[in-house]
Image 1 (cartoon, rainbow, N blue to C red):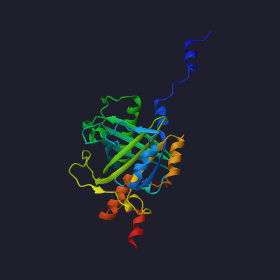
Image 2 (cartoon, helix red, strand yellow):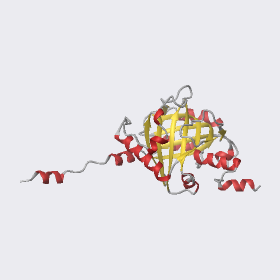
Image 3 (cartoon, rainbow, N blue to C red):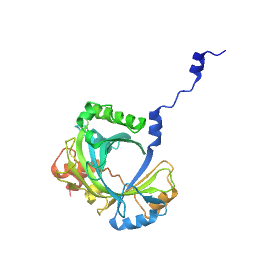
Length: 284
């Protein structure tokens, strides 16, 4: 006869919510700088495979993204990107449209070799701030346990590295989503600009924005200012996306909007994070 204790010991443990959460968000990203003249051709090419992002408005479907990048006082996250660390992460707080008109999304974006793992948590715009990070209020109505886990992980990393607002990034995104694939997206970003900021509540309404639409800011090897094209998929990249890269002879480039803002600020305003390639450019 089997006792109740023996029955309980043979039960399989339930899978942990965090493990399910991480597996679902593993993805791959390819970034390309394309000339403005290529944008209509890309739109036409993806039309049979994609639908407009429902979050966008107009034709083409667009929306404004404003991101508050957090980093340590020594810019540890920026330098991890500069030195191409195999395992690194970014802390960003993102909102859409006019600040205050939508929720705030707290994101931890990890890059482990070629794979991107991103957690994302939505909170009301009005509760975001330094006090939330260092005096946690657990009465937030999270949509799921996954979002709560993502929130706590964001807070943990902020505290661990002493993260604070460093710069705001703003741009207009045109976005498309695959009709049939589990996860495949095409986006094109334009009017990239940044604003240095140390304020937890500043979303750029009063400060000066600086353009990042230049060949220097986007990639020194290119001789034109273009559009940032991003192709995002899970590990099973659809054939139509592979064919798109081949058809337009796209060349993949590294393009981190946050580090670009830090580099440009250093180059033109004399801060300490001067990019490695800037010295080469200034030597001519």
